[in-house]
Amino acid sequence: MSNTTMGKAVHLLPPPEWPKPGPGCGVCAALAMQRDEAARAGDRSKVSDCNVEIREHKDAHPRRRP
Image 1: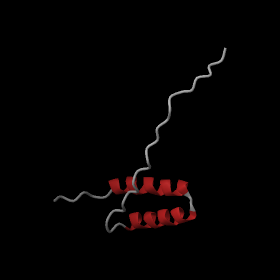
Image 2: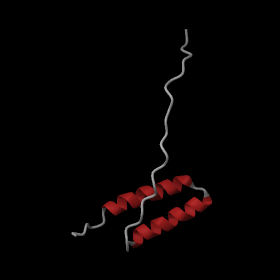
Image 3: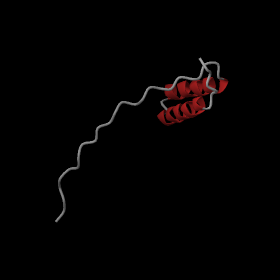
Image 4: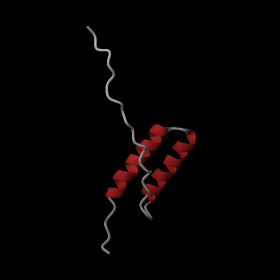
C-alpha cells in the first residue's frame, strides 16, 4: 500500500539583501558591477555568485579600530 499523504508545507524566506561592497575596495566594486550587469541580464545564478564573493571578500578587509 502506498502513502498518499502530503508532507509538511515548505516555507521560504525572501532572499537576503545584497551585500554592500567594502568602501574604497576595487575588488568589491568590480564584483558589484558584475552583479549589476548579471541582474540586468536576468542571470540570477551569477548574481548569487557575486553576492557570495562580495561577502567572503569583505571578511578579508582589515578591521579598523574606532
